[in-house]
Structures are given as structure tokens and as C-alpha cells.
Length: 334
Image 1 (cartoon, rainbow, N blue to C red):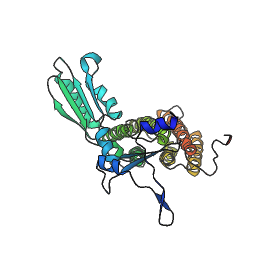
Image 2 (cartoon, rainbow, N blue to C red):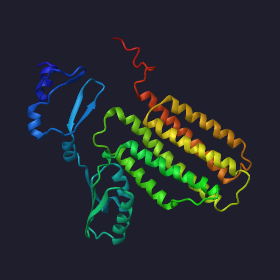
Image 3 (cartoon, rainbow, N blue to C red):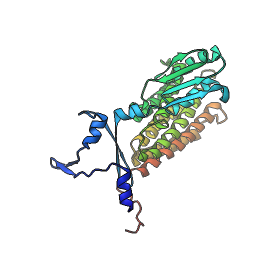
Image 4 (cartoon, rainbow, N blue to C red):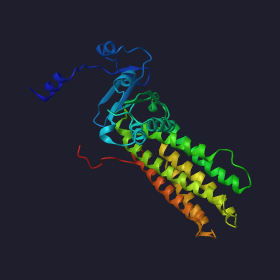
């Protein structure tokens, strides 16, 4: 038996002719057997995964939602870890139903802490809580929330923090609560992790990009903490001659944040170049800073160092795209 015959016997294979629709569109019909088996109707969404080996994988979205519901059951007597610390990891890994069981009575305080922790997890809810069993369900499909939307939300939260400091330096009162901003940032960050790490049907071509997205999300969380440090410092210390320079630096940091986020979403050499120019401009302003031993100065230096690393990550996406100036596998013998 040939390899082809073995392949034919292992899978139900049908042949379809490519047909033309209109002046330029090509199409093929779906196998009737598959349509009937999965009750596919007009208007249903079909997920298409494109592989480098020339194959296409089709999956009906409604089948994915039913068959790929991720569930996990944890014996908390064996693992001996606090439930709240475990649930954040399991949420990020994309589990839809998380069950904790014990032969002993689960401490009420742990259940209360779990309920409090779920406030950080969009769409998560404790649906069962008894003496020996706790079940948490995630009722939101994070994959339906676009990656662009999540990154833009992170950008907006951090930018508002920077704007708040600029407003304070200008004698105005910030509008948003710092605590509320930090809680929002945590929720969006966990959603982003669930979207990227816990994805149930992520195509292989996006894996490298999503890895870079997660790296930058971690960097942005660190930048947010540094911004909070600047905020608390300037509110307890007297303003000095460095205030005008700090305001200009913060405005440029907001511009740089925008270039970092946008260049990873929409790879662009122009955005990367703009980001590099902003880093040079900020470093030039830092040279004019008078009090280089202050917490504000060192925090800004750390922010720029982090943003430079994030920009380098974002610039990597340029080489994941099919750009006209890129020729891949040029030395492959044909």
C-alpha cells in the first residue's frame, strides 16, 4: 500500500474544483456530509487556519464553542495552594470551568477571597460553593474581544495616568481615581493573557506576534507602577525647576506609548522610527534635568528603558509580515 493510499484510508477525503465568482473571486463548496453532520446553516461563521505547508483547516465556530470548552478539576488537598492564587493562572490559561474539590471542609475565608479575586477577572463568576466543592465559570469568550481593543484599553489607562500627573503639575486636579485605574488595568491585562495564552483556536502564524504582545503587556504593567511612583513622589515633594522639563517628557512618553502599541498592532517602519526619535528627544531632555538623584528622574529613566525594550519587541512584528522589502528562503533550491 502506498503512502497516499494509507492517507486516503485514514481520513474522509473529497475533491473539489475551484470555481470562479465574479471577476476575481474564487470559491469551493463545502462537503454535504460535513454540513449535515454539524448542521451548518447560511450565516454560520467558519474559522480558517492557513498552514505554511499549503493546507487549510476549516472549523465551524459553533463546534469550537461546544467541543473546546476547557474544564479542569483541582484536588486542593493534594496541591495545598490557596485557591485565589491558582484561579488567576487557570483563568489566564483559558479554562471555562474550574472546579476545586476537597475531602475536608473548604475554609469560608478562601471562598470569600476567591469571590473577591473574581472581580479582577472579566466574565468570571463563582456558580457553586459548598463545604467540599467550589466551581467557577467564565461566561465570557475572551477571543471575541479583539486584541487591538485590549491593547488600546491598556494604552488609554496608562496614558490617563500620565495625563493626571501633567494636570497636577499644571495646577489642575486629576479626574480619575488612581485605584480605579489600577484595577481596570489589572482586569484588562488578565483578559489579554486569556485571549493570547488561553486561545482555543489560535492560528500558528499569530503565535510569534502574540508572544511579543504578552511581553509588552508585562512591560506596560511595570511602566504603570513607575508612573504611580512618580505620581506619589510629586504629590509629597515641592515642585522645583525641573517641572517644565518633566511635563514635556511626560507628554513625549504618552506619544511613545502610542507608537509602541500601534506598531505591534499595525507593523510600520515609520512608527518604529518615530518611536526611536522620541526616545532620543526624551534622553536629550533628561540631560537637562537638574536633580538627577531624585526618585522622579530615576523613575523616568526606568520608564524610557522599558519603553525602548517594548519598542524593540514591537519592531520584530515587521519581520512577521510579508513586506515588499523582504525575501524569505531565498537560498532554497527549487
